[in-house]
Picture 1 (cartoon, rainbow, N blue to C red):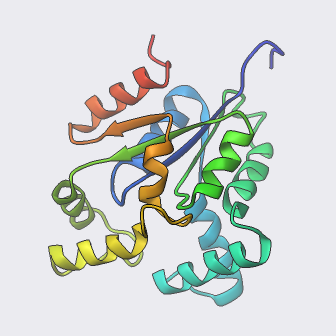
Picture 2 (picture 1 turned 90 degrees about the vertical axis):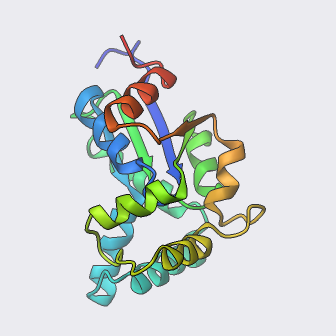
Picture 3 (picture 1 turned 60 degrees about the vertical axis):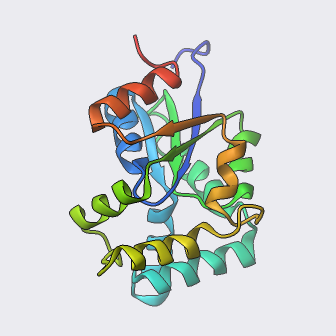
Length: 193
């Protein structure tokens, strides 16, 4: 790797089903920026400790990690994990799925930028119906909204996805077809040619 190449560090937060993982995969596939999901890290720890990756177990595990190792532990672990991928992905790292400002601040501490993805709530509800993920089955739109309210926390809370949005460097609205959203993100990140 050339010493003049600048390492890209992106923190990717956003509302539920707003395109974080789609953008992360795109950055990895097209721009050689390694995508690491903090949710995957929590799943690994939960499976090892509890033998389960059910949503309540994941919440418990994430909170245990934060309580015992600090509020920024998930992004710290993701950035440490990136070091094992750095040779294969020299362009940089995109860390997604964090839910607290302390985690975003860890990205900023490493010279990174924070990107926040969002989309209208009905659009995101429809996306969750179409995809299958652990613990993501909703019988009604109201059930989806209730879960989102629990996960987003209070805007002024330090554990709040909504609290990250006003401090993000880039805010992306993902209400367009996927290709348009990815092109918008690429342009906003200065990666389009």
